[in-house]
Image (cartoon, rainbow, N blue to C red; front, side):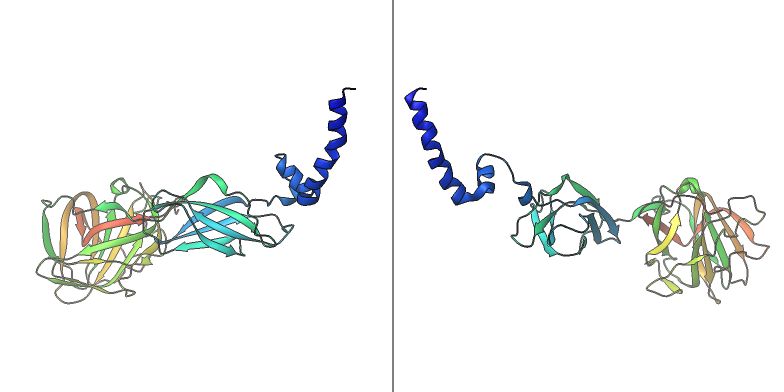
Length: 314
């Protein structure tokens, strides 16, 4: 054997021993480019998001159950503007609600675990980051887009008007709905009740009847609303499954007295009226409603948000 190799073999233990004493076997593995499995912190799995209302997103994820060691979690907002930032740390639960957001905005998220004993983190997951979007109202029906559409005032004192919007006129559906009403420019219109429902899918001689119990449409928490001098009144957000392509019923009970109501000409729309009747909240309404074609009463706009319902109400 060459004398140089013999000297190298004799000197090798003297080199390795201090490294082992200084770093331990784990340190040697790290020094040589190998990660010790004992040191690895498992990353969370299956990050998912759900929009809650218009200003919140709830995140949830899975983790080893039970975890081999205590961990906490961190959430990262990963997007260019504002810049990437870790904005939630020390989370014990496997969910987090990000609130105070703008409606209709996109956000990108990642999450990681941090071992409590040594604050060693896992990798950020997923890659690419998870996209979540806050809800935003979208217009499904609008009678104001044509300012030249003929409009007139009619007296509906004490009457019930059931307004039927054709499904073909609804641009989209959603699980949340908001209705904007408007009155005549120089008149005040008082409504005792406003409801939303869908008509029966099966043939019926009374197209003003609802397939389900009509849902109240409230304004500032009140069932009644006053339309003042052409000013718009925007309803509260109502949870109701509006389906694109499915007809929609908006029913009004008008207060007694001189109630002049704004009526716009809208091709394809139908209205059913009955004098001295208050049946906006009734599912199976009386017979004898008069039919008026190609008109819409009071409604300026119908907006929807959220996922469209999965199927029709029979």
